[in-house]
Structures are given as structure tokens and as C-alpha cells.
Picture 1 (cartoon, rainbow, N blue to C red):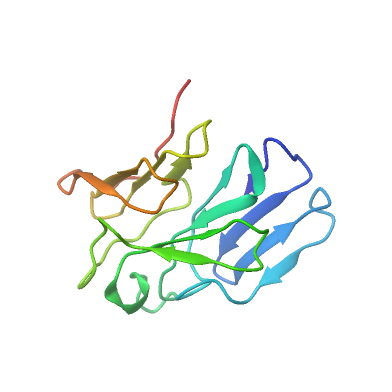
Picture 2 (picture 1 turned 135 degrees about the vertical axis):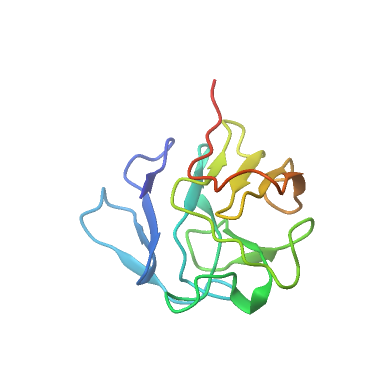
Length: 150
């Protein structure tokens, strides 16, 4: 679960049951039913400057736990979950077996730079708010957490 920095009443969560958002300090939750290839996944990052903007990494449910359609993508909403954009430039586009754990997607203080690590040792960075990605390494051990410091 992540909390909006500029709007502390906004919370986002993604888990086995889907994507949910709260705009009232976690008193009530709204389920997001349409979010690109899948609402299943583990990670979410929220823009520190705009709590209506959040990123997710969709996957196939428990039986497989791989990216939906074998293609790694990141989805982004900029309107609190009403609509989603899907981005895959620079990410594996076929036969992808990368899963992104809960703490493996982060956004810096500007809301423009993201970092993402996978269970198969892939590390990617985006300088374009998730619209395109650069691979830093595909040869690390499984990554359990990424964070920007400072």
C-alpha cells in the first residue's frame, strides 16, 4: 500500500484481488476493474506531486505469476484510476518471465524518474514517467526492493 505525499488521504494498493484506491484516508476503497492487460500484480508507486497518478506492473494470477501475455509492461493512471495507459518501450516484449515484487517499483521526488527490479534480476530505469525504460542489468540476483534516496 502506498500513500499520496501531496494528498495523504489517498492510498493505492495492488494485490491478489486487484487494484484499489481510497480517497478518504483508507476509510473506504474503490476497486479498479479495468487497468490494461490485468489488475493482478504486487507493486504500485504513486506520484509524490499528484496522488491521482500511479504506476502498476500487471501479471497473470497465481497459477503462473508472469507478465500478462508474456510481455512486460507498466500501466499508469493520471486520473485516479478512471483510465490507464500501457507502456512497454525498452521492456522485454515476448517470453518475459519477470515478476515485480511489492517494493520493487519506485518513483523519485520529481514524479518523472522510476526504477523497477524483477525476480529474475532485471533492473530498469525510466526517465519519462514510465513511458520508456532503459535496462541497467539483466544479471543481478532476484531484486526484492528498489528505492530512490534523497
